[in-house]
Length: 244
Ligand code: SAM
Image (cartoon, rainbow, N blue to C red; front, side, top):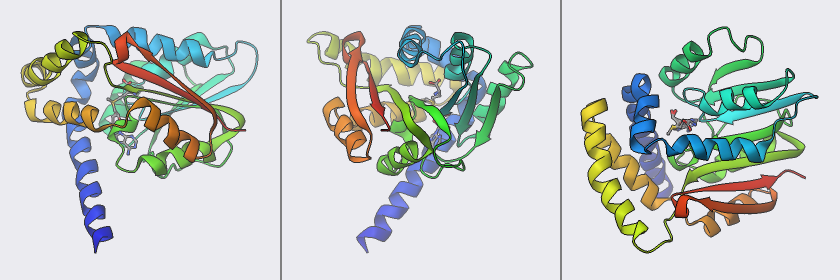
């Protein structure tokens, strides 16, 4: 049946994504800096500026597809002693690198959970914030992930998603295309020994819905007051929503 076919295709997609991140886990942070020319740091800082973890009260933050912990560490630094972050990722190799980076610095305030964004192994209404940075694009069933985001948020909780978007500036779009199709796979080949995987990631950016369409999906999942803003000429966008 069509449904059976779709299931196979989606399963393959997740397998592919898992291969990519297993192969790059150790070099992931370096790759990020190289491929975005350091820009990912500014984009992540912007996400945390919107999140504003409070200084003086309890704040439970879930970072899905949290990989090596970048968003989590920034949230813990910005928040107060009662800010706690759960980093969830489907790939244990990425989480292991994150746990090593964390060391003892945030003992008791951070935990690492292996799991799938499509079916979070976490209770209902447990988190003040759900973030996902450069993760949702890799998830085969985006609708399922958004429904799970809503489920685990407390009423009043915030959803924030940082993801590659559509470059909407003339000239920049050409440069960006050339960079994506020629430079990124080469860096992938040199540093991670894997050009094919990086070609696949570039493709996944092309296929991701436009910011307006993605906002519609977030609304369809039952989140409210959905807004989005693009950064760096549309290279990335941050979508925001609330569970009411
Ligand atoms: N959030 C981190 C950052 O911004 O540096 C890591 C982003 S990395 C590009 C994408 C991450 O998504 C990988 O660590 C990968 O293992 C994870 N991932 C892919 N599919 C997933 C899924 N279905 N559920 C949870 N995590 C997933």
